[in-house]
Image (cartoon, rainbow, N blue to C red; front, top):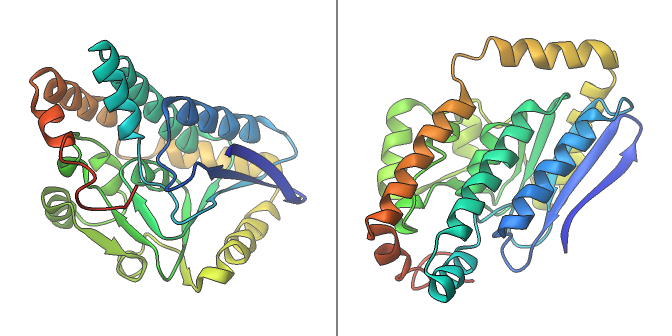
Length: 254
């Protein structure tokens, strides 16, 4: 359980997340993921990173139960602050990884999962993959920055306000998912793309990543940090706790 790194082929590093039952990451998990991604990118022998997950789904966001326990036990906001900082670091680590990151997505990709894949360089998804931001149902705000990298603007707003999800096929139609494959072929398809990328000159692929980030029209760190301020405001105002108290009655079975 946790975050692990493997090297199945020359030039490719696979970072795998495994936090049963639904890959809702605790505070420490987000920082561990950020560390693993940055370490893989710094390795001069790595030319592409595949970000994958074990279990029922790719990512269910932050561990809300950890946040609720901390609030109940101490009345403070340490878990909220930790989750905010951890997500910020993990999302940035994907975006700033020195080599391209291919996300291999299966099952549900929710909340913080959108932050990860929205900052990835390419996405390969299984046929059962769904993508969404149920933040308004969880007493939070955020990652619209990253959803906007996956779908057009008006669809961002509709998905965000309703907490609905989009399928892998729908995202493929919008051009944000590279391939949609059967569940059993997911890792192989992600490795196939990573292998093609890793065949390029290692120094040049790093320059290409830096160049593409440099011409990006959106500063993803600044815009996401702006969003996080509203999450904290919702917590200070009490509305976040009111909404989170209903969590678990609907949605992903925790």
